Length: 133
Image (cartoon, rainbow, N blue to C red):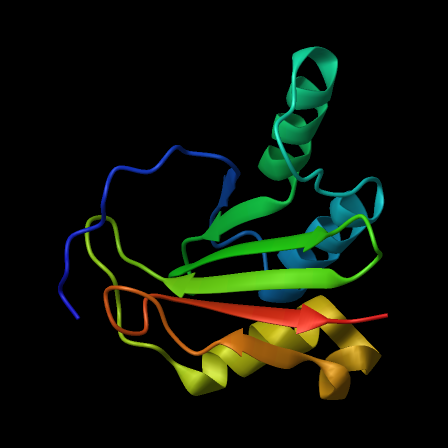
């Protein structure tokens, strides 16, 4: 699990110990509900709008070691991605902490959320979850 992190653009905000998981999840949920991810090639103003949406719906929570996204697609489905990562390497998947994040992100709808991908490369690095309408 000590695979190095590949070069990735820094999209979202970084939150320290003054932000709880519940508070970060609430902010992401609010931001994600304001718009949706646009698919396909985008030009001009739509590209800028989409990039802004991606930035506002991504976060890194230092106390839990989680990088998280919460987004809506154009059909109204909600998507979350969780990744446990240190400063320069992936961390082992933590089921209890992942459940805390998913509960905070989806609230009363948590039981309807399904895992779309179990793991990615390196093993268990990123997991994608979906809540369909």
